Length: 493
Image 1 (cartoon, helix red, strand yellow):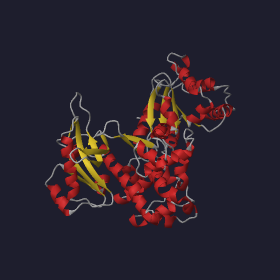
Image 2 (cartoon, rainbow, N blue to C red):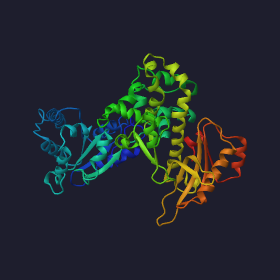
Image 3 (spheres, rainbow, N blue to C red):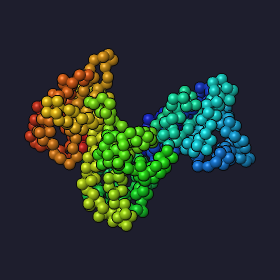
Image 4 (tube, rainbow, N blue to C red):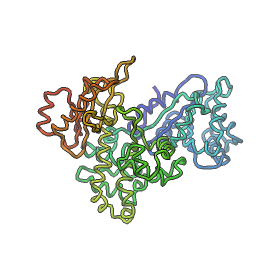
């Protein structure tokens, strides 16, 4: 059964259950787990509470030399074991064995938080842990230490168990701690109005710390308070959230050329999602962008979405809403914001906020709804992939941007893949019959497309402003049409 999740941890039921399962495993032999995720997601709280609930050992690493880290670890071990003084740790092999020794009598949780700090000062530490966990080694077989390595540097943590990395094949748990999804974020912020929740999520996303530590639980009291909340909580130089987007880049040691990375993110925030579009925006050759794009992907700041209708083509989008908001609204007016002219900046940024932040954010939320919350009956199957796409009409030689293309699970054989839905998503416009006609035309084009089975594809229309009465009456007689408004997005399937 294991310890109950502490009341102070919001959501994270799955993560807590996996950690408890790993930590309370009674089988013989020390085991390794890896926990990763961007900063501010609550990893430290989860692991600290796990160690406390199971009587385990928690050590938070800092940027320090090897000798200093070993000294701090020895002091912490001394306190944990009740020794008369610090435990002397001559080197990392003896330190890892000391951690394994904690589990001689039974399962013991051992958490090393911010592990990348230790590994950067001691490059051979992953290899040392690999050796310590060698199958058949007495120190491992005689221990039931449940060693958890945690880190926020995603580029480093992602490579810890990959390819030919020393720890590949050694871990019994690999747990990513992602931001809260949009529905959980609305509950976390205490927002019952779906449109207000969507507007807040488009700025702060699902990072728990942004409500608690960064704005001291200051949430909009209602739709009428939203503008004032943005100015006092996000555009206020006295609040930590004000500079957070800058710090997200500065904290990752792999992001050395911050000016270049800011420019790439600015290009994407402006709607330039292709490599060529990004290159044109920042004045570089497309071939020069392979490295910065890869680094930003590895750091969890950019996501590359393949276009399901154009092989080899893809678009980039920013993974952290706060960075999109910073690049689109804050960065161009930084001086004025530092001079506390937040309300003026916010008033003149409404068009940019809607087009560059809210609109794309709403589109991605609809795609997440299709993936996570829509019932199988809604689309006639389980949505396996949902992304934007570009559809070419050969007869007119024109291209149509589709805000959502939902694909079903790939077939077992060589048959066509089911196309479950195509759709139009708009934040600030009431959708009408011409929008449905356009989706009808898109489906007609896709029916004849090889490799896809679009005969039963639904037509999805999503809008925060709603739908004309004519469209509603039409769709009442069209079971192949799915209408999605904010209420359905946040509470329906």
